[in-house]
Image 1 (cartoon, helix red, strand yellow):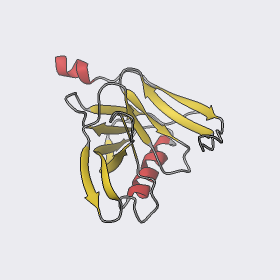
Image 2: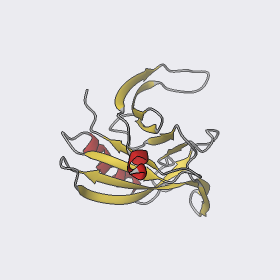
Image 3: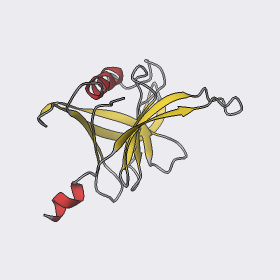
Length: 163
């Protein structure tokens, strides 16, 4: 009974944000979207046409692995398990993805690699497209699980985005 209570996710909500360009910092500004569950963390995207996303842990660090790639050089990040579910809560598809650690964020933010097609993990864009298609559908949800360091797993259930 205790394990069920600990793994239950609270309700989150989608938010649409506008950021202003900052010439000094070199940021272009624009619209971004986030799905946040208080106490757990969230999922953030720049839009459904930019095939990149971030995961943010509000409660503990992701369990970061380090490695080396001939094309990407050294890297650190986490493998996440992604499930796409239908309206009835039945798993339609599952796959694993590599997400890079975002520097200077205390291992609490990971993201898809944005280093060009030659350096991004094979199949990343197609997997992100599947996630985004599910998040733009009329039902179902996407679930993402990632290990955290000395904590329970980050386990986020994301419903479709509604304006």
